Length: 131
Image (cartoon, rainbow, N blue to C red):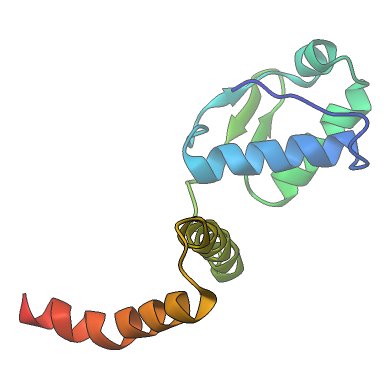
């Protein structure tokens, strides 16, 4: 996995790295047992100070997502986790917003869209039971 940091994002660089590793684990790009670059190598690759990577790795280790082995490197020590309920709801909301925008582009009114959603919620369960 390749990491990219954005110094102008307003988010600390170590936090960006932590977030990218978490995302890699959640999406399955990083798997339990995968080896990450050592602190010095990753710091040089990202053109950041060693302390930035060390702080990120330390936080990931504290969370149980990384295991640091002196002289051997940093290993992913967490299995892919399910999305939290709030992450699931945010993702669903984004999907619905995109879907509704598409229906509006097709010329449906908000009232028509609302009725379609309500009908789907009310009748889809009984429809699925009949199948």
